Length: 125
Image (cartoon, rainbow, N blue to C red):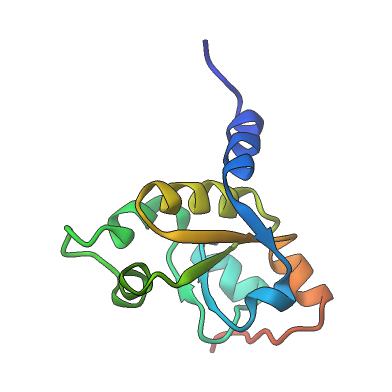
């Protein structure tokens, strides 16, 4: 039996906690949006940017592609707050990170909620 993308997202959301943008701003933020979205919508200063499509390779300490700040967060037991445009990709990413041994949350409402809360955003370049 197959399931829909909506069902996959709902299942992922049921496995991870959500935090408000305000709660997340003091911790490590992982932005899983595509590079073009960062250019057009801005980005959170200090966030790690890893597009959702390559997350597993960057989060795995057994690959040469591992992202140092992300791997350090896992070793330290720090929470990784995951951000996307609205929360769907972040839920999938956070659930995957949890399976990989991370402590991860979803930033409620994604980048839209971040901006609505008046939190800082920069545009590259």
